[in-house]
Length: 209
Ligand SMILES: [Zn+2]
Image 1 (tube, rainbow, N blue to C red):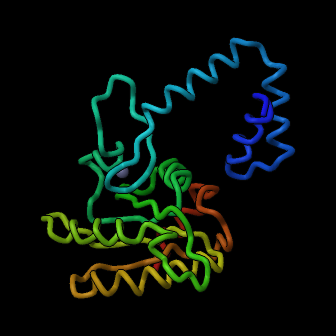
Image 2: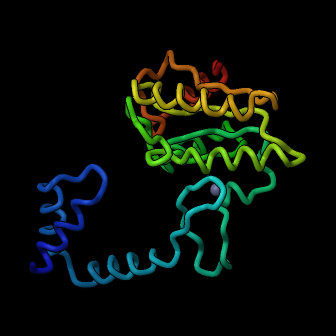
């Protein structure tokens, strides 16, 4: 396999990229100047050392070059954020979109995926074990989680995931009086959280239930 074929294969792994787009990227790179290619290669190499997964919310984050070894992302490490509220999202882009609204000041947890119907081993698809551990740990602290909010897409798989999580989590938090809520659906039927705008999020947050 020559480098252009190998690169095409690597681009195919990118989310949402098909064979034609992968080939387009390779042709683009072949035409680009060498210093662009060097810059790209250099930054991919640097990403290797800067990419981290947050121990608490499981979000991937890039640590700054001069930062010492950090196991927590900046949101989890921020003492000003409200520990009493935990928002469950599928992926990092959802957090980015919600943070942009500047309307939510609690913590997050990244589920990693949605749960398809009839999944036999949910813990192999979503980060449920880690979520249960996080909640257990929080309930032993002084500043406990008081509300768990699902910010998942209003699709069939989203609903299936919420049903599963409600059932599983209410078994462990039920007696501890933790409120479990879901962002209101009305305005954003089928909407992926990563595309949410400020007003839609505000409306869905205020009418959660
Ligand atoms: Zn985190």
